[in-house]
Image 1 (cartoon, rainbow, N blue to C red):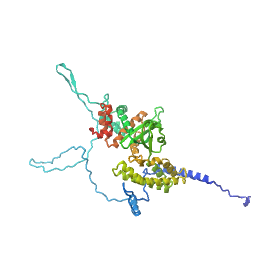
Image 2: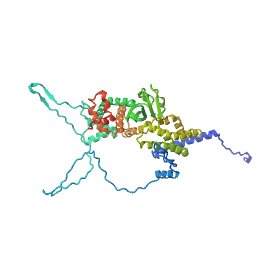
Image 3: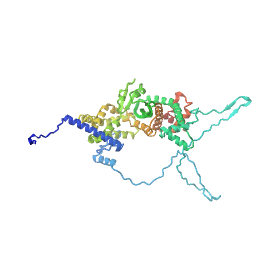
Length: 497
């Protein structure tokens, strides 16, 4: 039997460094868990409403002198659920540009001596589903007098002379796939309902021939985009069927370049996400390049010196993800972003010149950024390295000189959101047709996404544009192909078909 004096209480002690390491690991795991829960259960919205709204700055002039009480009321107006009175439903006015098909209904038992005193007009929106039809081109032959020969009308230019697919059908197939995201097998089902059987090989043949016809125009688009002195760039993955490994998919990338001033978009496919892809296309580029924090863009070795800008939305996203980790600090940072984006919203509401925008940003945005930078530097030494808030602070400070570069020119944008919007159709397409059949097919898809994204930015109806291009491009002069690009097609008032 042990004596009481022989019994000792065993207590485990750890050092301060070990404790900090464990706490750091715990917060890192907690942050990963919060992010996982957010991806699975949470809302994808990144909207943030500040609990302390500071006075809004006036546009291109003095700051508004709102009192704290009015600011609080404004916050309440933003966050409070409003109960709106029920509106009486109104029938929408039908657009004037839609064609009208008149149907005149005379009254029954109308006598001959009746006099028309007016009419009641009711307009109903109707729809005729698209249908296949056969364009039958008949060219009569004529024998000239005295055996002088035979004459016949000239056959119109056809996009694919050795095929029976017309310009309208080719345009419909490509728009359906890359704008409406209908894979070929679904298009075959639609054609089948119209009693026309078309094989997958035939559709693929039409697709390959039609896209080959557009390749010279794609080269012109690439050349024009690279002449811009301000580009945004991003990349997005796409599954590609691997011909060397049956049943497996290779992850390739669509590299997307956007010229905001000129309204041009270029998709380029590459099998990797390495520096080789942007360096190849930008090897002779001279200008400003705006991107996210991917280090590839900062390491580009080009013939001309590049000015780099970063995306404020990406920095903001890090702090939005850190709200669950350190709500106080992350909220403060989100409020600074909110103020900066409030200024940008004011700018968008006015048709201001680049010089005015630059002056406005330096007057109002620069003080916010200076204060924010001092706060970031102060916080960095107080944070555990692996925490979400530390990653947000570190990311923002690492790219700070590129993030504030948008102050230097009014044509620069604060973020890359516009280029992310151009990538969204690619994401929708991935959900429907899952992967590209080959690397060559992925590049052909990149070409069509380039054309249709440029159509969208320039408010050009894609089917009308492509239908007309297929009729014109076989006979169009090579040195004037730029006239057929979407932005020039609209401005030149080329006849819509």
